[in-house]
Length: 220
Image (cartoon, rainbow, N blue to C red; front, side, top):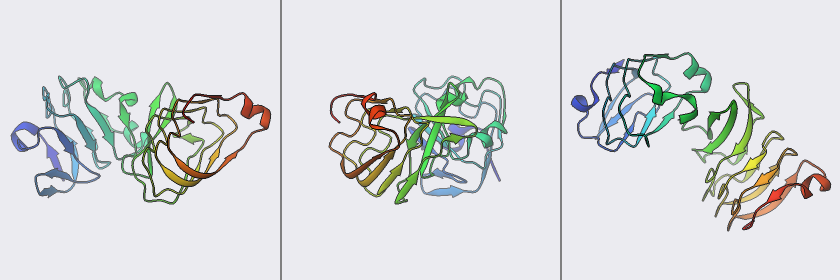
């Protein structure tokens, strides 16, 4: 097991993106397994990092581990929201609020929990059929965020649940796929959500009257 105590001293060569992917940390060409703890103050004051991927193997985050870092820092967590809820997190880590975290990074899709609702992000295109569930960790899935599946060419079929109410900007932009199943709860499709997308069939789980009520912006 590995505990990261002082990031700047232990991994001085990494200045912009730290990728602790799943159960290992990448430092140059060196891999260490597994990372179970981020020590107190380990990343405190580091203004260079822009993105951090945390493995599901982490169980403890010490006091102030991520204090004083860039406000634009992105956190991606390879475990689920339920896993995160069981994490021991010390004080001074306000940046690690769930709405700033992307969960299940590296899975066929990842997600954020915002205002007790799940928003879908794409991270892995190694499946041909992607079926999004209606709920994740008890939260309804309501949105496919902007750029979620942009430029994806390996997923052939998307199945969206009735709980999804919004498809964001460029969510499927320049993607190519065979079919998409849209749920009856859909209410809004952002501008250019399907811009230059190449697809064959669209299936809708509602009536013609329901479809007419959907706000579909230009570029679709």
